[in-house]
Image 1 (cartoon, rainbow, N blue to C red):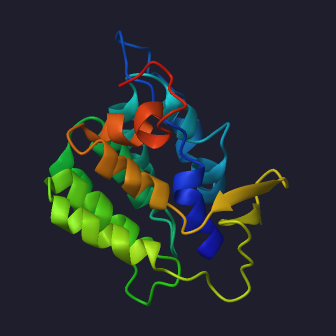
Image 2 (tube, rainbow, N blue to C red):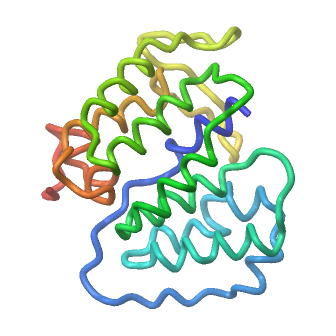
Length: 205
Protein backbone atom coordinates (compact mmCIF):
# COMPACT_ATOMS: atom_id res chain seq x y z
CA UNK A 1 0.00 0.00 0.00
CA UNK A 2 2.94 2.33 0.67
CA UNK A 3 4.09 2.14 -2.95
CA UNK A 4 0.54 2.62 -4.21
CA UNK A 5 0.04 5.79 -2.19
CA UNK A 6 3.37 7.20 -3.26
CA UNK A 7 2.41 6.62 -6.89
CA UNK A 8 -0.79 8.60 -6.40
CA UNK A 9 1.05 11.80 -7.17
CA UNK A 10 4.19 10.57 -8.89
CA UNK A 11 2.28 8.92 -11.70
CA UNK A 12 -0.09 11.85 -12.17
CA UNK A 13 1.54 14.04 -14.79
CA UNK A 14 0.99 17.76 -14.97
CA UNK A 15 -2.15 18.70 -16.88
CA UNK A 16 -2.12 21.28 -19.68
CA UNK A 17 -4.88 23.85 -19.78
CA UNK A 18 -7.36 23.11 -22.61
CA UNK A 19 -7.65 25.49 -25.57
CA UNK A 20 -10.50 23.93 -27.55
CA UNK A 21 -13.17 21.27 -27.17
CA UNK A 22 -11.42 17.90 -27.58
CA UNK A 23 -12.65 14.47 -28.59
CA UNK A 24 -13.07 12.61 -25.30
CA UNK A 25 -14.60 9.46 -26.77
CA UNK A 26 -13.25 6.11 -25.55
CA UNK A 27 -14.11 2.42 -25.81
CA UNK A 28 -16.04 2.53 -22.54
CA UNK A 29 -17.09 -1.12 -22.55
CA UNK A 30 -13.51 -2.31 -23.01
CA UNK A 31 -12.18 0.01 -20.31
CA UNK A 32 -14.83 -1.00 -17.78
CA UNK A 33 -13.90 -4.65 -18.35
CA UNK A 34 -10.26 -4.12 -17.31
CA UNK A 35 -8.87 -5.39 -13.99
CA UNK A 36 -8.47 -2.57 -11.48
CA UNK A 37 -4.67 -2.45 -11.73
CA UNK A 38 -4.80 -2.17 -15.52
CA UNK A 39 -7.55 0.44 -15.37
CA UNK A 40 -5.85 2.62 -12.76
CA UNK A 41 -2.09 1.99 -12.80
CA UNK A 42 -1.29 1.42 -16.49
CA UNK A 43 0.15 4.74 -17.63
CA UNK A 44 -0.64 3.95 -21.26
CA UNK A 45 -4.08 2.46 -20.69
CA UNK A 46 -7.14 2.57 -18.48
CA UNK A 47 -8.48 6.02 -17.64
CA UNK A 48 -5.14 7.82 -17.74
CA UNK A 49 -4.82 8.68 -21.45
CA UNK A 50 -8.25 10.30 -21.22
CA UNK A 51 -7.29 12.11 -18.02
CA UNK A 52 -4.12 13.46 -19.63
CA UNK A 53 -5.98 14.76 -22.67
CA UNK A 54 -6.71 18.47 -22.71
CA UNK A 55 -10.29 19.20 -21.74
CA UNK A 56 -11.19 15.60 -20.88
CA UNK A 57 -10.88 15.71 -17.10
CA UNK A 58 -14.64 15.59 -16.50
CA UNK A 59 -15.00 12.71 -18.95
CA UNK A 60 -12.20 10.92 -17.08
CA UNK A 61 -13.94 11.54 -13.75
CA UNK A 62 -17.18 10.08 -15.07
CA UNK A 63 -15.32 7.09 -16.50
CA UNK A 64 -13.69 6.39 -13.13
CA UNK A 65 -17.05 6.81 -11.38
CA UNK A 66 -18.63 4.34 -13.81
CA UNK A 67 -15.80 1.87 -13.22
CA UNK A 68 -16.24 2.09 -9.45
CA UNK A 69 -20.00 1.64 -9.74
CA UNK A 70 -19.86 -1.27 -12.19
CA UNK A 71 -16.93 -3.19 -10.70
CA UNK A 72 -17.03 -2.18 -7.04
CA UNK A 73 -13.35 -3.14 -6.61
CA UNK A 74 -12.54 -4.65 -3.22
CA UNK A 75 -9.66 -3.57 -1.04
CA UNK A 76 -7.79 -0.29 -1.05
CA UNK A 77 -7.20 1.45 -4.33
CA UNK A 78 -6.76 4.99 -5.59
CA UNK A 79 -9.78 5.22 -7.86
CA UNK A 80 -11.68 7.47 -5.46
CA UNK A 81 -8.67 9.77 -5.15
CA UNK A 82 -8.13 9.96 -8.89
CA UNK A 83 -11.78 10.74 -9.53
CA UNK A 84 -11.47 13.50 -6.93
CA UNK A 85 -8.47 14.95 -8.75
CA UNK A 86 -10.26 14.95 -12.08
CA UNK A 87 -13.28 16.70 -10.56
CA UNK A 88 -11.04 19.24 -8.85
CA UNK A 89 -9.49 19.96 -12.24
CA UNK A 90 -12.85 21.13 -13.59
CA UNK A 91 -13.85 23.12 -10.52
CA UNK A 92 -16.19 20.56 -8.94
CA UNK A 93 -14.67 21.29 -5.55
CA UNK A 94 -17.56 20.07 -3.38
CA UNK A 95 -17.62 16.67 -5.07
CA UNK A 96 -13.82 16.50 -5.09
CA UNK A 97 -13.58 17.23 -1.37
CA UNK A 98 -16.16 14.56 -0.53
CA UNK A 99 -14.21 11.99 -2.55
CA UNK A 100 -10.90 13.07 -1.03
CA UNK A 101 -12.29 12.56 2.46
CA UNK A 102 -13.16 8.99 1.47
CA UNK A 103 -9.46 8.51 0.66
CA UNK A 104 -8.26 9.21 4.21
CA UNK A 105 -6.70 6.20 5.92
CA UNK A 106 -8.36 5.18 9.17
CA UNK A 107 -5.92 2.43 10.10
CA UNK A 108 -2.89 4.65 10.54
CA UNK A 109 -0.71 6.70 8.26
CA UNK A 110 3.00 5.98 8.00
CA UNK A 111 3.48 7.78 4.69
CA UNK A 112 2.01 11.21 5.40
CA UNK A 113 -0.84 10.41 3.02
CA UNK A 114 -3.51 11.86 5.30
CA UNK A 115 -1.60 15.13 5.60
CA UNK A 116 -1.40 15.30 1.81
CA UNK A 117 -5.14 14.68 1.53
CA UNK A 118 -5.94 17.25 4.23
CA UNK A 119 -3.68 19.79 2.54
CA UNK A 120 -5.40 19.21 -0.79
CA UNK A 121 -8.81 19.68 0.83
CA UNK A 122 -7.63 22.85 2.57
CA UNK A 123 -6.45 24.25 -0.77
CA UNK A 124 -9.81 23.57 -2.38
CA UNK A 125 -11.54 25.23 0.57
CA UNK A 126 -9.32 28.29 0.41
CA UNK A 127 -8.05 27.51 3.91
CA UNK A 128 -4.46 28.76 3.97
CA UNK A 129 -3.95 27.98 7.66
CA UNK A 130 -5.16 24.42 7.10
CA UNK A 131 -2.83 24.03 4.12
CA UNK A 132 0.14 25.33 6.11
CA UNK A 133 -0.68 22.96 8.99
CA UNK A 134 -0.92 19.96 6.67
CA UNK A 135 2.36 20.97 5.02
CA UNK A 136 4.09 21.09 8.42
CA UNK A 137 2.77 17.64 9.36
CA UNK A 138 3.83 16.13 6.04
CA UNK A 139 7.26 17.79 6.14
CA UNK A 140 7.89 16.23 9.57
CA UNK A 141 6.85 12.71 8.52
CA UNK A 142 9.76 10.25 8.88
CA UNK A 143 10.23 7.56 6.24
CA UNK A 144 8.74 4.14 7.04
CA UNK A 145 11.01 1.41 8.34
CA UNK A 146 12.98 -0.18 5.53
CA UNK A 147 12.93 2.89 3.29
CA UNK A 148 16.39 4.35 2.77
CA UNK A 149 16.35 8.06 2.00
CA UNK A 150 19.52 9.59 0.57
CA UNK A 151 19.81 13.26 -0.31
CA UNK A 152 16.08 13.63 0.20
CA UNK A 153 15.15 10.86 -2.23
CA UNK A 154 14.48 7.13 -2.26
CA UNK A 155 14.03 4.64 -5.07
CA UNK A 156 11.01 2.49 -5.86
CA UNK A 157 10.34 0.12 -8.71
CA UNK A 158 7.71 1.35 -11.14
CA UNK A 159 5.09 -0.75 -12.96
CA UNK A 160 7.48 -1.13 -15.90
CA UNK A 161 10.22 -2.54 -13.68
CA UNK A 162 12.40 0.56 -13.82
CA UNK A 163 13.54 2.38 -10.71
CA UNK A 164 12.09 5.81 -9.99
CA UNK A 165 13.73 8.32 -7.63
CA UNK A 166 11.12 9.98 -5.43
CA UNK A 167 11.53 12.87 -3.02
CA UNK A 168 10.69 12.31 0.63
CA UNK A 169 8.26 13.17 2.05
CA UNK A 170 6.22 12.09 -0.96
CA UNK A 171 3.74 14.70 -2.24
CA UNK A 172 5.33 17.53 -0.25
CA UNK A 173 6.14 19.28 -3.52
CA UNK A 174 2.44 19.31 -4.37
CA UNK A 175 1.46 21.02 -1.12
CA UNK A 176 4.27 23.48 -1.77
CA UNK A 177 2.81 24.14 -5.22
CA UNK A 178 -0.60 24.76 -3.65
CA UNK A 179 0.97 27.27 -1.25
CA UNK A 180 2.99 28.90 -4.01
CA UNK A 181 -0.07 29.27 -6.25
CA UNK A 182 -2.75 29.60 -3.60
CA UNK A 183 -4.67 32.10 -5.71
CA UNK A 184 -4.88 29.69 -8.66
CA UNK A 185 -7.37 26.91 -9.30
CA UNK A 186 -6.50 23.27 -8.68
CA UNK A 187 -5.70 22.54 -12.33
CA UNK A 188 -3.10 25.29 -12.50
CA UNK A 189 -1.66 24.89 -9.02
CA UNK A 190 -1.25 21.12 -9.40
CA UNK A 191 -0.37 20.94 -13.08
CA UNK A 192 1.46 24.11 -14.02
CA UNK A 193 5.25 23.89 -14.27
CA UNK A 194 5.49 27.39 -12.80
CA UNK A 195 3.70 26.23 -9.64
CA UNK A 196 5.29 22.81 -9.31
CA UNK A 197 8.81 23.62 -10.49
CA UNK A 198 9.48 27.36 -10.16
CA UNK A 199 12.55 28.55 -11.98
CA UNK A 200 12.33 25.88 -14.66
CA UNK A 201 9.36 27.53 -16.36
CA UNK A 202 7.26 26.35 -19.26
CA UNK A 203 5.62 29.60 -20.19
CA UNK A 204 2.57 28.66 -18.13
CA UNK A 205 1.08 30.59 -15.26
